[in-house]
Length: 167
Image (cartoon, rainbow, N blue to C red; front, side, top):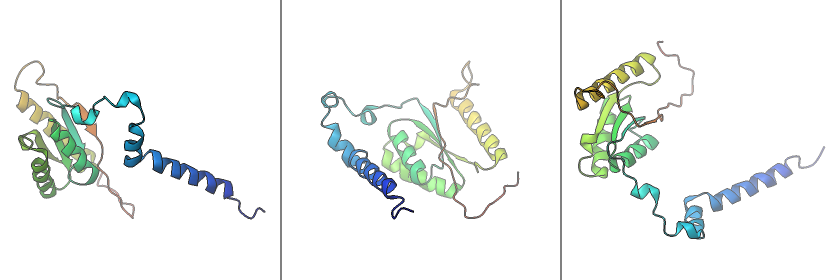
């Protein structure tokens, strides 16, 4: 038996970690971005992007990454459907996001209550979304076709025990 059977693996993992830390963090990105000549005069795509007239649905939008994604999308002018399990938490988050995103943000945010682990809830939520879209666009050729430009599937729960749904 070798004294250090994982020695090569430890060395490789350490090198991989150090390289990633110096190149692929925010600080590493900012440092290396300056070394590329063709990036010097290019505006940051996230800062100049406009999402006016785009419609997004974000699951788990009342906390964490979902809340940050919702804030970004709304601040860029998108209409966002926040899919959340808890209505009171969703409404509280909607107010906070609207305050951060600026004027007109609250009108572009819609809350849909749904437990994504239940198929019946998802189907019901989709029906409410289509109904809202039909109400927003009225009658006409495109009124029966819901407009959804992006779906962010972020909802999740980390449970320590196996739980079965009613379905």
